Length: 317
Image 1 (cartoon, rainbow, N blue to C red):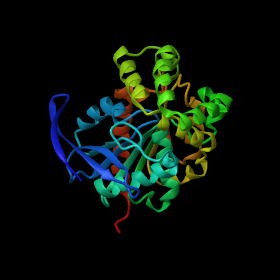
Image 2 (cartoon, rainbow, N blue to C red):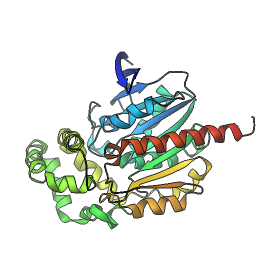
Image 3 (cartoon, rainbow, N blue to C red):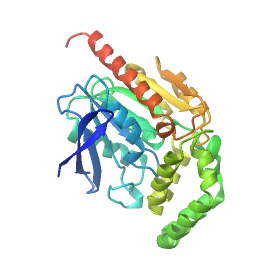
């Protein structure tokens, strides 16, 4: 692992940010960034969504770095996204993303306590992880935040209904046959459909710089990455993993006008997790982590307090 240290500023406080690359068991190098002391009592892992990258967490990450009690903050680009390596499209699955997460945790958090915070596909990755590594919930995994995401039935509501459209199958087939041609067409389509994308991702009022950041991340995502994960979303169902999260403090947060993963998904998840806290952010859309980072960071801060409180109440081993 190659590590470099740079300086970044969060508010008035300078924090160290370390960049590294971590290799998975199938040889894919993931771009990882870490903020905070190695001896922090908690590691917060931020998992980004489909066609985004760890940069989507920039505003939230800076606010978390200002918390009075120290935490280690880890974020990374999923395979095929951002600065991480591309992979065989057959490996673009949620099970594979969960295994990647396990590798990242082993290399950055060791045996310490971890809070998983997932946005959109990142939340799906967290849920897949808790199913695949159920023994870690309540042990290494000490808390979970599911943000603008779902546990199942993605094609049944909101923009997810488009997954049923035959054009999706055509798009995936065209991508397999001629990815460069489709990539070029994608860039044109992103410009043409920018107003539709804005309506799907964001709420009623949002800073243009936030929209520009989201559009840049979407435009930079390889077409193979975009297309390959769509099949996963069609059949994704981790609803059986939800009850186990009652063993740890859990929050479910959504924007009230999210068209990608409408609030009905969050309501259903919160109802299935004993003791979960449901947070509805008025007038925010799917990109709530960029639209309302102060609300998201405050919710994560409260979750960290709940995790620490739960640890204090736990009987000594």
